[in-house]
Image (cartoon, rainbow, N blue to C red; front, side, top):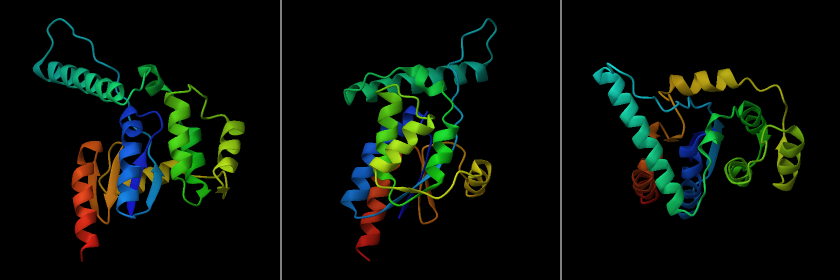
Length: 188
């Protein structure tokens, strides 16, 4: 099983969804989707007398932003980066309260947020999508902070992060390694 920690406002998470779903399908492995509020960092601006550390952080964040946009364009996606600044806590709590295979729900919610610019925190929208995906909602009293604390105890500090057993994979760049690990498990 793959345990995937995601946040709907994370462009990196959105870009990882299709490859993770393909990996799961190819390896006949279920995915357990878990909420985790990512810490979206604003692009730093250059300042006079910028320290080496400040320069490093600014250049790295600018590079990450360009790389995200590059991969989005390669997939034919026109992405509005401001969507990454929207708090998606309501949708994440909703996800944590669902029972069943939530992969279709996840995929549709990411598309609604990033492509259709839908308010994914709207309970009416979430109820309709839940019904459309054939899922059941267990309850609304989800403690997102507890879920995140448990994840952080496992070493997680941002999304997307994936676990196969106790192996942690931070970011979508590790999907080929995850594929190899799952293939090796399947050959045992």
